[in-house]
Image (cartoon, rainbow, N blue to C red; front, side, top):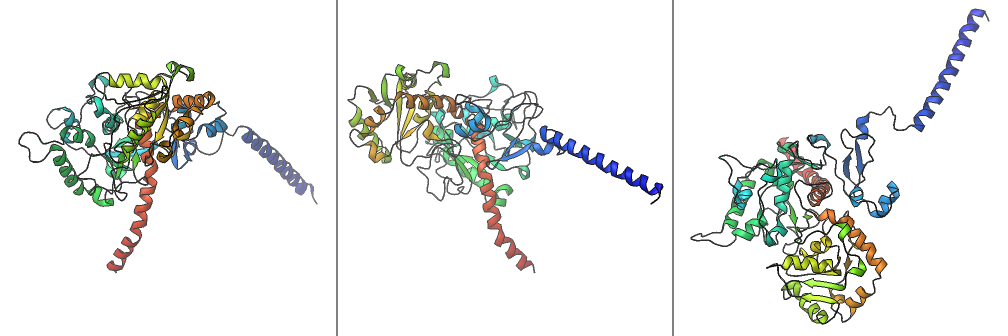
Length: 492
């Protein structure tokens, strides 16, 4: 073979050897520094976890990502944190928001379209009067927020907080989580929100006044049904993607059957037939508690809570609430049990808060309906709740394990003589303290506030809604199979 043929072959061999060596070195380098990748950075922004889209914070570098919807044990395994780590880092699947920056509609968990209903359906019920043709109040400053009436009205004020949150979602200078954003085109929305303050309408306007032949509450429900039935958005999917808040058990009584295809935000299912409201499509939201939330550092521990069990409220109730009077006669003479009548009149709320904060266990017993705000007053007081309500549904139970901070007792067992007291007295200080510590972690998930914060009640409700959306879409797509096939046959 000639020298001219040998030189190119040797050169080619050396070139291949050097190339392979460089390839091995570069591969090793990439394995050691996996964060440097040929994969575009945008791909890493979306991580699917528990059927929820979770995005990294915008413009925040080198910050640990928060994993949503994990139990305390899962969180410790994944992040290496101790059992005392902040619950917000474990549970909240919210996205950060820097003040002065709007949320990116392409990087939010839930896009919501809200009907511009006239003020008579929402803030007008609070006495707000805007300028001519003004639908919504100015929410850009907290001092301008139109107040909600106090007392027992507050416990069902959920539609008020959700509406405020949507209104503020497009205002840059309000710091709130980028979980949800209001969009102005219904075709871009995952959910269509109906801003009717139905609980307030029932509480304040369900009785006839003066020469009225129909109450304002009934009139508004009729007008709402007529409005929705004429909307293209409702006709498109039969209302299945609409969200209606009816937290008071008696709210929307006249319209609920006609609007039953929508998603409801409820306190419980006690007064609803299963075909109208059920856990598969609807969201259970916490009551707004009435007692003051105890700061974690001020919460009395086990040995500073002299009362074993606490209950104060209406005792003689109908339906499932009969169990209250049975427990009253069983427990009223026990020295370490506080079981008395009570109301919110006078200093009733303040006294109840003090009583719960000085008790180890707080009894949450079924009344006229399976739920009450008493459970959430107990959580705010870091008093371990004892739930005695067989038909109750609990908020966010798909992501919260209530057994970590509550005790649940079947009603037939609770009314057995000695059963409940023996159970509670048998719980050791160490067991109680573990539940008490967990209560201090989860309390944030039951707080309503403006502006909303990551992992609070408003944020958790929107996340709960987002988890219903895939199921709604699945049903719609499945029901469309034969409808479209029928149209194809007819068109031919």
